[in-house]
Length: 375
Image (tube, rainbow, N blue to C red; front, side, top):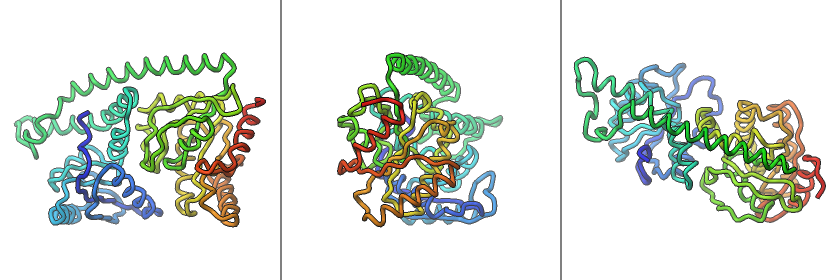
């Protein structure tokens, strides 16, 4: 693919925070984790406060000059912006800083790209990139080849390989057709399984909550487990231990501020959730209260946006082996309050440890009962 730029680049990361962004420190902390996971070496951090972003550049001109100067001093070649950039903002930041500029949307996709292991995942990632970059390249071509055909910043040279917008649109159309075909096949396959009496429980939750570890522990599979985010991009079906008619599905992890366009590009993964008979929501119960709240809230927003909160949900409170008994009781109580606050209802919470095998038999029983089957 032509979008990612590889690993071990030196980067300045930046955020424009506005009055409503009260938890910006946690969001920025999470953002830094993602940048490192993508292979960037963070050499500087810049945060600017403004009541409103500037429509043409996001940041103020003085702050842009500061970013350019600090990047030059520290040898950075990339600017990674927490805020999602409009095409004109991206272009102007590149123009005024002389840096390669990506935003949060593109950063997440670069991590996806690193972990894509099959054709379907690569197609869905490429589609998500195209949805973001076609407007950018359209504007860029207009500015470079305007009525007077004036050279714009970096005309030719580094950008000489950029494909034309028409080609990009044709490529997007071909990808959409292929994904539609694969989606029809996927739905037909799921419904054939249901016709045979299978019930489907799909694992959802924040990345690094231990979803794949729990999937392996509950099915006997040996899927790759990694501390890096988004190592699961393609769904995997397998029978639940002790229940021949229940299929467990491991699928893509969530992240705070995940753009809905990315989720819509991964329509086949989303279909595993939409067609599920129930959801198994995995929560890392060992996280501190602020992080736990941010991740619960983010997960609820994604589930709600995709009309998934109406499905039966069981919560696996994972990684209890990292807590004392007293701490565990407090965290479970706090989690119940969060669910009530952000969902407005109660779910069954099953404490467990995929790593140590604690609580798994009870979790299996709960899943079987929830789906109305016998072991």
